[in-house]
Image 1: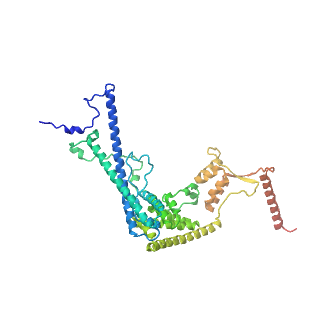
Image 2 (image 1 turned 180 degrees about the vertical axis):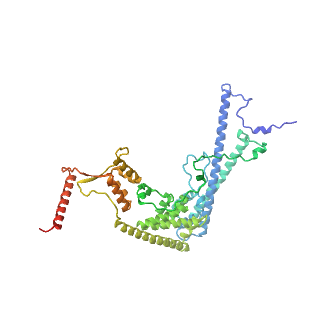
Image 3 (image 1 turned 45 degrees about the vertical axis):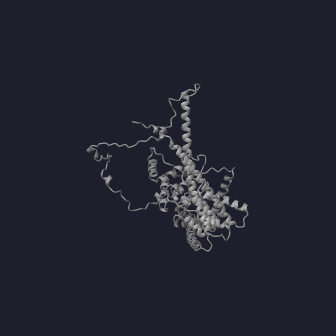
Length: 497
């Protein structure tokens, strides 16, 4: 029987027992060096294959967009009109879906030194800018025809590049498959079976966690719902000031992208398209809602120009989103075409939406002004102030461990107050106590003040006035003025001599 050993010819070996290196070269060192060389060449070859495959995908995407641009240019015929504007309009028509604008992610190690892969729209914009420079330098009379010629020239370059790339890629893949390496070893047909007992088919019991409670019936009951939602003003006085500052988790506002998009001048559709192309996520529905809220707030604040711009940009994004997969290109194609019905429909919608926001903003501004006018009239409150400028009201907190019955009674009264009032009294400042009293009804505040006075928590003390300071002199003048007014009032109301 003849044995065919030709299948082993494809083995790539770094060690050969029949090979003898130069006598001055160590055989083990030579084998290790050859191993490293083979591994390095293999790694370099595979890295180059991954790079060429990625470049082929990028070039295919770019070539399809160049084909669409040429088709859009040829659809305009001889290009009667401004050549630059026609090329820009053709670029918009061939833009495609913004969601497909981002190239596929790079394989690991491919172009690792490049920070960010440019989008297809950026590539096309760079190509058009380069073509424009070439057209400007040619100074041809048929500017539009020169545009088409130069773009076709770039198309031919990309096609030729793809042809050379495919040839080189096929050569590298053929070289890679010529040798059998350890990476080529894989498991062929393999099967295994495990016999399971019938008991294992039964579902496992779930471990239940039992919790011992004092009142087992309360666990199965429905939670009690309070029928009344009213609270006393004393409880309202205990609410912390910071509680009103909590933000609503569902607060809608535009993101940073939306705010930047709102800064674009109304009617500058080229800048709008460029921004959407660079930031496709700005077309999201939340940006439209956020910009409309921003327009409403700006209108109330009196920023009418910014409000109009926000409405315009919000509806622009809404139209791009509602026109389907190729909505961005379709919208800008229609809006930039002279005399197109879409222009009137869109601008009328912007006008009507802004009119509604302006009307509602005026109503809210009027309501706020009325509320402020009513609030300026003042609400009856109980506040603590010393009548005589020479005296001051001091706060005395009863001791918790006192043995005297009077102070123990005062301590019980103090502990019956709402926690907010207790904290205000412990602060020792009259302003904090007045803040809490201002949140109470007049009846409750009068009752609290009476309890404070009865239990000795408020005391009047004479002030020591330093006449050598400006404040002391001002206080003396105020006291003298009050005394003069008091004497004058007694003389006017007194019995005649």
